[in-house]
Length: 425
Image (cartoon, rainbow, N blue to C red; front, top):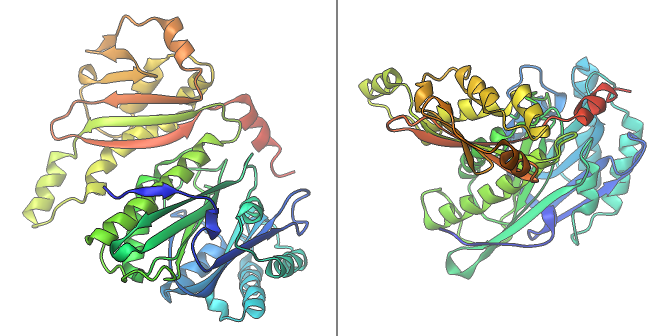
């Protein structure tokens, strides 16, 4: 397995990238505009929300990404710029052109992002000032200002970076910033992640890697089961590391790079779940022993097709997501209540067929259900274990040829209701 090392620098850890954040007055406090710039043209890839209702930036970026090249990412926080009609589309284009004019590139090479309240006109006058300020303060020392500039209800900025050695002694760096705290159930929340790398990599290969990594990380996170109109993961790769171009994920360099990219995405996905609105603990839901339906497998085999690893694991992930999205499970976790019945009931409505007596459920390391009945566990001991900052729920359906999937979530507290009841105002 490829070895990677955690490093400082966040989204500007890779060579040839600069960033900045600024307070433009979209929000009352802290930075609300962020800008990331590559010194040279970069290969661009993206994964976007599957919500039918999509923000103007998502619609525009899907078109821009087709060109395969980008120089910058600009983001405002506090306004989603979604469902704003023709004005929303032109405002998004104006954000891109404002950056392009200042850094000297094609406007189609500037990717945009917005996050905040839906259906409110974008305050372009303020955003223009924010863009001016960020363009004037671009630096490569750290990503603190930019990481703050994309936050909404997050309680802390999220940044991470790693480096990995490829063939020929070339060291490649991957860095990122992310935001997300509520309206999180990415299915590509209000979730954004911007990744930079100095690797030299073909665009189609990068896109395929990003899609796979997102499936196992960002698409395996849920805070409240709500998929946003703005979810986006964007990657810029500027080739400044000087490595031999990565043209395939099957190559040694390709595998090493994808492993590093996956771990960057995984770290930030878990941080998003950990920082869920009002959350007191990170919850990992691990589901094992879930087999794809036999009729589906036979149908594919009859047509000389094979289910991909993601397709085979999707049934286990459906079980894990149902448990992770259950308000009854999440409130029990907040109360440190070892209520395995809520978990089993959630598994039962996941759409996956199974034999209940074959299921085993383990809470925080304690087996609480097996052979169709509760075990003789000590409720007080398990309740104490559930008070930890990180808790694991393990569920095994014990089906032959079964697959495993993991989803990350958090508990559901009083504060989640308070935050979201007051969010618009």
